[in-house]
Image (tube, rainbow, N blue to C red; front, side, top):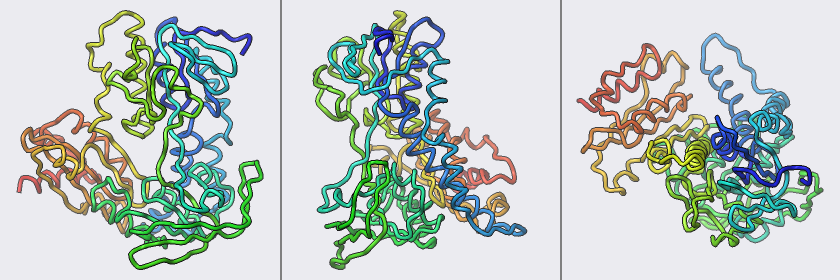
Length: 478
């Protein structure tokens, strides 16, 4: 730190995808300077412990399933060690050298350590105060929450980080949670041979999705051997031999979980327990109070500027602002944020639409990489009605020539949520194999407010799976 600069145009605290993009966009095409302050790995949660390793673990199971659903192909199963090696290659064995090189090549310095706000445009890192001429961007994200269940913390449960970086597949796994992380982990663990039980407090998994999506995911999980206990919650956890070696590996005997449901109390035993029960803002040590903000999520306006902090110098992108906790949306916010910082530094007005984040309100695309995948964008029917829209829906099973050619057992469902006042899409949900690859057309239609009369002239190719769009529009005209 002593030989490094202490003044930059832009300081970014947090080196995940959102922080990287904010820094890059803020200095692009200029002589401005930027630094990323990162206490762990440049590339962040998504690159090493979440999206990337999870997808790397999920994809082999999807490919195996597709192969088994195709005449003329012999598929014997997964080589677990090879799957884990492939995962390791994508996370670079938890080495961020290539990301640091990218930053340096982009003229972004990297400072290792914990960034702490100490005043206006000032960030302290291990005793050295960095000063920003134009902006400080907070991009520290969130961390996994562990609920206050008696004995749970003492049992040293896995969180998503542990699960995606496992080196051996446990025989019996209990997953607490029913959201995206829980459903995806159950999917790939089952494909790798684990016996999985999901403990879900609510009445459905993926509670914010269309009900048919939740139902189809549960049915598929159960058909793969996963036990899904809905309306159930843990009341106590016991693991007498648990200990942490300090090397990232948790050892101990079997874990016993006491459960409560409408049917009474039960117990089950497993080799590992995974907590996937939500996230909390990663602000420990950030010292938000130094700039007058309460601890927790940082509220921002549509320029990604922190509310209640005068001077338009403090920004927040990614999960920490609690607008849309998805990597691609954090990167989107970061692009807007970087452009805003650059414009303000150059004295330009913020009149261009690119300076305003709008898609992360009600036009958010998301893919859950279960088997089948759940791809959605915009509002569900329930959310649209709650927001006061005049709503019409159209839905059907995906059963066309393209889907039959794709695989023998293709099963999918699609639903559009239509604003009858404007005749445009408010949202769409597709469930089926590779459904995520069908989503961007819907995203463009939602964001672009394309009238359905115009979509009628967007002709899908034959015999592609995307021909289901034609069937949806036909069903609406009927």
